[in-house]
Length: 282
Ligand SMILES: [Mn+2]
Image: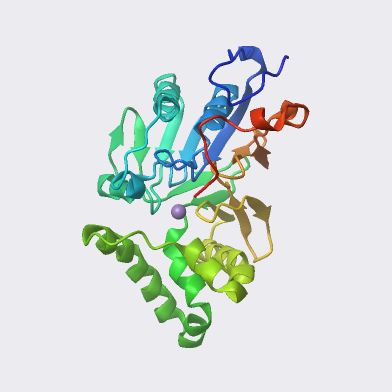
């Protein structure tokens, strides 16, 4: 099949429908529609070529926190929403688990729009019967920031911190404060930045162990991964701002990280190798 350079609005896209990749489940997080960093053209392209029986939107799909201050909603962002609604109409089950950037959707747990269900978290049962907790992951920010203190204080402090964090950003938003970013915090504390991915992964994996499931599927830190380093299976979808990755479950229950890149990018002149009108990630 001919691969057409991706992410170009001014070039026709002509995918062979027969060549589309079909999965049992797809997990996508951190698309950040409504922000300038969002690689909507690439994501749209990915959606055209990939399909699944169940699609989990694992948070921060829409960047609502930003939209409040400045409206940024080009056609490609609209096309992504249309494409998802269309997939729902055609029979895919789509479950939207809000993250911290689209937490305005947290008022809508248990409801659905255009066939897309909104839920705080989900348990995904793989083809082989193994169960996985699906959540965005921002509730663990507090654990990452205060890991040493919480370990010292014990289980109740850990549980309380997660409980408090669940409401922390909600009140910040209601009071009109700017969004508090974990990654910004980590970058300022250079020593912690090295460990913060590991600490996040550890906190999320622990939650899977507590809930007695095989593992966890999350997003939030924009770092795709599949591993068993912390006693349970940890899988992170990555993001569509920098890395353009998604997690897929095959029909036999095995999982794979998909990286959506432009095969011809290396051969293209540098000014053509990035989607137009998409500046570097904020
Ligand atoms: Mn997030």
